[in-house]
Image (cartoon, rainbow, N blue to C red; front, side, top):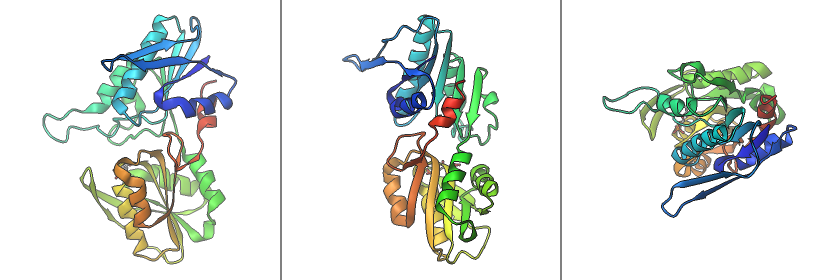
Length: 292
Ligand code: R5P
């Protein structure tokens, strides 16, 4: 088995190689003068299993095309199995036609990968109206969860007696409540109303004794940051000791990191599914295990 990093997968591929017995291969990725993609596997992959590591941020569109082209080329060159490690799977939130004429992107993205890979490994994909990866992917698939790694991080940093884990919306319960329950922390799940892609309202549905508590908000994705910003603001009104933000997928679009900090989050950390300065929770050992 050889692990090839694609453009967004360099760091995580190195981590996977380090956490496993598999070596890193080299694929040259460049552009023609007109912007078209050029790929060249520099290792002989005939008869080998090939792992392509590509997270889908930044540049989700480019990263999909790169993954598809690399996977199809690997097959043409005689790879026996092509596994895509895609820690952040983009387009999963576009899972419904909200307006007539709108593109439902999740299944189109999945159909491209179904036609190219033999197996997909991803981490906490956003499964909301679609509940199972099997509803989108007919190839072999594995959904990993960052929950245990986030739980270990929380336990190592915060005292159980004085902390509350919060999920900013119902969907985040699968992270926030599951994590809190696994380490015996208290949890509270809020309600979110999404008014637009950049505007949300958070309703604090569980009132606790927030004063003096360390409040840790956990969500799968921080994108525009507005979910986290509003959750931080609502909690801060209740005078906790401090508010902390944790996410699996650190998109932080449009200056979201700075905005969340300004809203009053004392720390903001993420897993390394997407490379970002906030990365503090490593998932490579978890991903490496899945390759055996
Ligand atoms: C949505 O349901 C997700 O779980 C996240 O809460 C959401 O993607 C965060 O987006 P934003 O940072 O743009 O509010």
